Structures are given as structure tokens and as C-alpha cells.
Image (cartoon, rainbow, N blue to C red; front, side, top):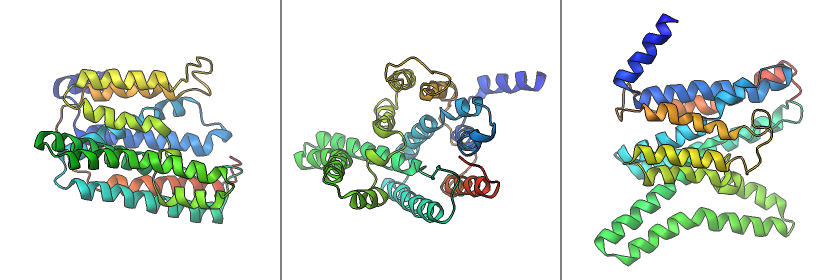
Length: 273
């Protein structure tokens, strides 16, 4: 208990670095995916609670990454490549083994790519406004609108009965329709707009967390737990803006490997999903 108190005091004094927040997000993410794969064999619900802030933490970190990277286009490209690799791996594993009726659908790279691409569009509009270049503003608007337009397009196509095309389209092209957090991925761009106002970011997270309830306040600790993402405000409030120790590239490897590994382990243990 004394060690825990000392840890809290240390956090209060120096805050949390980018490395600290990312490490926390990775630990909570692992716990969340343990629950996802093994909840049917008795993993407690509080594992799920701990996982709810994860997407919000990584959206916040994507704002920091996009803002401070030396090459924004390369950053966006890495997320797109991560999206493709994740979907290829998911498809191979889902066709090779099974865990009851559960398939791997996870791909946070989709959410992060669209979020960061939208940030790039916002930045392009801002630069165009400052330079009084309407063409640049138009380009920025098109960048922002493209994922939404593609979502509408694939929805229309799927309604014609060409479901195979829609499925392959979503595997190849990131859209909000295929994102883990659907339209709530746009919390990332909102946090980008508020990047110089920490209080505004915390308020935005609280608002989005409230909206995820769908104004349905039953099952808030059972089937309707996404609102617990509001807990992300705690580490973000202590974020000190410093990079800390380098963790470059680790997330891109750990994310797919741990999900695939847990799913394969569940299959080997005979978990029914």
C-alpha cells in the first residue's frame, strides 16, 4: 500500500509521459482482449471495464503522434499498412481455426487511420485558409469527406445484394463502417481540434462517453459498458507532454501479435466463444 501511495505521489509531481500513457494503454488493451477471448470460461467482467478507456487513450496518443511527427504522410501510411496487415492476418486465422462462433474482427488501425487522415484534412484546410488558397481548403474537405463518401457507397452497394464485394471492400479500404468504434472514432479529430486545451479534451471525452450509452442507461455494468471510456480522462489529465522512453514501432507489432496469439490459445484450449 505504501508503494502504491508513493507511485500516486510521483505521478502527481512529474505527470505521465507519452511512454507512460502508451504503456498503460497496452496493458489495459491486453486485459481487455483476454476478456474478449476468455469471458465464456469465467474471466470476470471487470476485465472488460478496464479495457473501455483503451481506444480513447490511443486516439489521444494519435493526436500527439500526428502533431509531433517529422513526417505526417509516413505516419498515416504506417497506420494504413497496419490496417491491411491486421485484416490479412485476421482473414487467414478466421479461415484456419475457430473459437465457437467468435471471429477476430479487431482492427484499431482502421479507427486510427481515419482519425489521423481527418486531422490531416483539418490541417490542410487551416493551411489553405491562412494562405488564402481555396483549392487547398477544398482538398482538405475532400480528404475529410472521403471515408464518409466511401461508407455511403459501400452501404448502397451492399443493399443491392452484392455482399461479397462489400466485404472485400471493407477489408481493403478503411471506412467508419468497418471501424471498431464506428462514428465515435471522430473523437480523435475532436481531440486534435482541442489539442491546446486539455480541459476541453477531457470534456469532449466525457461527452462522447455519454453519447456511447445511446441514451440507454440500463446494463451500464453488463452489456452497455463503453461509457467507461470516460476513465481515460484520468491518465490524460496527468499527461505532461513529454515523450519519455522510446517505444517506436512496438505497438504496430504487439497489437496484431497479441490478438492472434490469444485467439489461437483460445482455440487450442477448446474455448467455445
